[in-house]
Image (cartoon, rainbow, N blue to C red):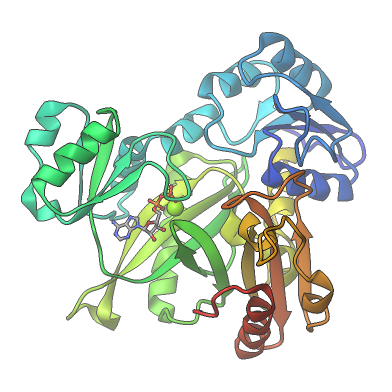
Length: 393
Ligand code: ADP
Ligand code: MG
């Protein structure tokens, strides 16, 4: 495919959330026009795109309009029906491909892909039916039962300690296909973003260290403060391996656990957790800490433009801003004291334009950049204190 040149093409996005919005911002900066397809009348990405097609993801009329108006199309969320991407792929360039997205939509298939690519994942069993439940090895307990499909931000997951709890938890999940994973002692959680072009050229960002609270990403730090260089090298190699084995085109985020293991080199073992076929929350720091953001590389990969090796120019910390911050002592919703936060050096606020703050809802993120990791963390802790967030990083 020849490149879709900036200023002379239109890019489409399935999904109108914050990832779509930041993709649109990056695409428009390069001079592309953007079309977003999302069923909601009010959407963060639809509000900034030149055109918002308000239609369901399987609506043939909406999909046909998207294909007619756009030269190339991507998705901003992994649960877009694969058939929608397939339909579009018959008419236009689509990246990532439906087949790659489909792998990411199902934890059992995803884990099989990791293993086939030679990248170890957590010990697990697939529970597709009652026989699968009965066959579970007791060595997987205590564990976490996860629905194979549609889980995110810790939703669709139950921690279980015994076979009886496992059976009850599976009943509670309506006996839908699940994966049981052994509960691992995590030393750290990491993720690696890669961008791969249609020509196979693959570039990557530095390893990101992630702190989750209640199953939701809370803080990302780059460089990763607690992880030896050799482990970081392994994570990058594994992420590139996973993307290559998928023949992936676009930005892919691969999440890892660095697991406590006495006797292992460096005191730990790296296992892959899951992946997302798109820019990722843990990569939002790239908007201010790198010369090319993850969204710009997604635009470039989709348009067939050259993929530069991104360079981190500042140490960075990202704080996720959930709707809870809008509900202080006064009951709210009231916006946090951004004026005080933005008085701190190297603070970059990104709000997603969501109409209403709700508990647990991703409203924005704050990037803190500095010359050194210590300085970035120091300011991030001050910002956290102003916002009433824990400074547990
Ligand atoms: P989601 O799709 O909700 O992000 P994950 O599989 O990434 O699902 O799980 C969410 C979080 O739960 C992880 O980031 C990690 O903190 C914790 N977790 C998940 N699986 C395990 C495991 N096998 N052992 C220990 N902690 C886990
Ligand atoms: Mg996850």
